[in-house]
Amino acid sequence: MTDQTPLVRIEGLSKHFGKVVALDNLTLDIARGEFVTFLGPSGCGKSTTLRILGGFERPTSGRVILDGEDVTSQPPEKRNVNMVFQDYALFPHMTVAQNVAFGLELKGMNKSAIRRRSDEIMSFLELESYAARYPVQLSGGQRQRVALARALAPDPSLLLLDEPLGALDAKLRGQVQQELKSIQRRTNKTFFFVTHDQEEALTMSDRIVVMNKGKVEQDGTPEELYFRPASRFVAEFIGETNLLSGRMRGTEGDKVVMDWEGTTLLGKAPAGLPAKGEPITASVRLEKLGFSVERPQTANAVQGRVVGRTFLGSRMAMQIAVGEGNALLKAYVDAETGRSVGTDPVWIGWEADNMAVLNN
Amino acid sequence: MNDRPELFRGNRIFLACVYWAFVLYVFVPLILMVVMGFKDSKFIGFPIRSWTLDWYTGVFADAEVLSTFGYSTAIAVLSTLISVFVGIWIAVMLEGRRFWGRTAVFGMTVLPALVPGIISAIAFRIYARWLGIEPGMGAIVWAHAVHNVPFVVLVVMARLSTLPRSQIEAARDLGADPLISFIRITLPYLVPAILGASIFCLLLSFDDFVRSFFLGGYEPTLPVLIFAKLRSGMSPEINAIATIALILTAAIGIWAERFTRRMNKET
Image (cartoon, rainbow over all chains, first blue to last red; front, side, top):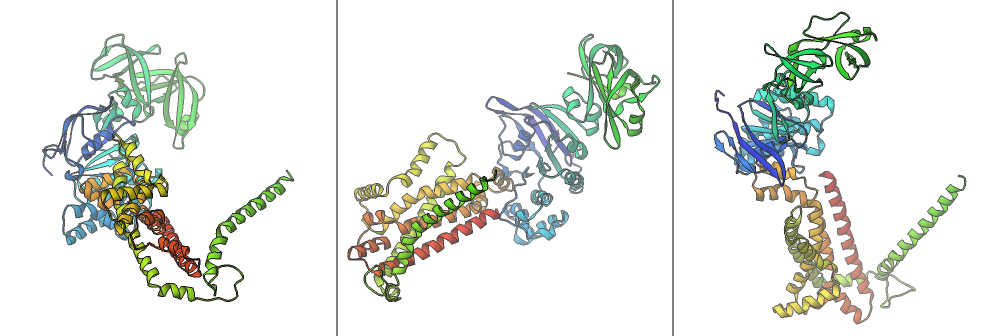
C-alpha cells in the first residue's frame, strides 16, 4: 500500500465515433486507493473513458497503463478490472451465490477456495441470507449490493462503477452513497465512479474530474471544485451559484477588480488574467451572501430590493434585484432572517475570497 | 345516454354468438372424428347403435401403425435437432449485427417457410435425385430440417434481441471469453425460445404430409400411412389413430406453451 506509482496512467486518450469526438486527448493518473469520480453531462466522455478502462471500447489513439502494463488492446476478460453496471447486469438464471462465484470460477480457483472467497465477500456486504435467491427475488438496493459483491470477489485492482445508483430512489441513494464510501475505505480499492449527479460526486469522492465535450474542465477535490471553480461550466454544473457578468478593471494585490452594475467588486483571480476592459464572469455561492440594513464591512457590498422568496424549511431562498433591476442575485438565508427582511432596500455583502472570477 | 347500454348489450350478445358459432365450426369436425373412433361398426356415420374400444386396442396391436409412429417420431426428433442447431447459429449471426448482405441472408433463411409445401416438396425431390440422395428417412429429415429452420431463427432472434448487452459485457468483464460467455450466459437465456421452437418443429415435422410423401421410401410416416389407409376405405381405426395423435400433439403443445411462458416470466 506504500506503492507510490499511479495505478492507472491514461496517456493522450482519444475516441472518435465517426465524426463525433467522444474523448479528446485525455491524460491523467489515478492513484492507488483513490475514489475518483468522472462527472459531467451525458455525452461528455465520462462513460467512454470508463468503457475504455474496462476494455469494452478501443481508443482511437492513446494508451492505458494499468499497474505498469499497457492494457490498451487487451480484451475485458484479460484485465484485472471489474465493473458494476448501470443496470447491474446480474445473471438471471443464477442465484446470488452463483453470480458472486462466476468471476472466481473463471479465474480457475478450486471449489473450496471459491466457496471461501464468495462467503467472505457476501458476509462483508451482508448478503449471506440471500445467497440462494435469484436476482428477481431481490429489491433494487440488494441487487446493487450483489453487483458490487460480484465485481469485488475476483479482487480487481480497479473497480469501475457506471452510475450504479441511478436506479435507486432518492432516500435509498443517500444511504448507499455512505455505504459505498465506507466499502471503498475498508477494502482500500481504487474506485472509478461515473455519474452525472454532482451531489453524488461531492459526497463520495476523494477527487472529481469534471468532463465537458470530451475534455477535462477541472480536476480536483470536491472542496476545490465547489469553492474554486476553474470555469463557468464547473461553477454552473456543481451546486447553485450566482454568475455576475461584468468587465475587467484591473488587479489589486492578488485580487481582480471588476465593474458590475455600477459598482466595483473584488474577486479571486483566475489562472490566466484577462486584459483590462474585457468582459468577465464571476461566481459567488448562494450561501455566501449576507444581508444587512447598514452598509456591511465586507469587501463587496451592493444595495438591492427583495423581489421574491421561497421557503425551503431550514432556510429561505431570496431573490434580490440589484442596480437598475437588470441583475438578479439569489441567496440562501436562515428562515428568520428571510422573514424579517421587508421590501425596503437592503445591503448584500460578501468577501472577495468567496467570489471566483472565471475564465469564460 | 339511456339507450347506449342497450345497444352495447345487443352488440355483446351478437359478438358472443359469432364467437361460439366459430368455435363450433372449428370443433364439431374434431368432436365427430373422436366420437366415430368409438363406434362399433365398420361404417362411419350416424346413427351409432353401440360403442366399443376395439379400434383402439386394434391400433395398439397393429405393428405397422406402431412402427410408423416410431418412424415419424425419429424423423421429428432428428430434423428438430438439426433445425435448432442451424437456427441458433444463423440467429446469433444475424441478430444485432450489421454486415453487407444481411438482408439477403435473412430473406433466404426465411424463404423455406413461405414456399408452398407442394412446390418445395417437388423441388426437394428433384434436388435429392440430382444429388443422388435415396428417398427415405435421410431425405425426409433433410427436407423437414430445412423447412423448420426459419421458425427457429425467428423465435431465437426475437429472444436474443431482448438480451441486454450488459449481460455479455459483465460475463466478459468477469473473465469469460466470447465462447464461454455464449455458453454460460446467452444459451441459458435462450432456453425458453429454444424449447418453444423445438416443440413447434417437432409438431410441424410429425404433422407433415407433402414432403414426407414426396421424399419417402417404402416406409411410410404416420400421415402417409393414414393417407394410404384412407385410399383402401375409411374405417374407425383411422379415427382412433388420429385421436391419439391429436391428444399427444395437443398435450405437448399446451405443456410447452405454459412452460415457456413460465420461464419467460422468471427471467
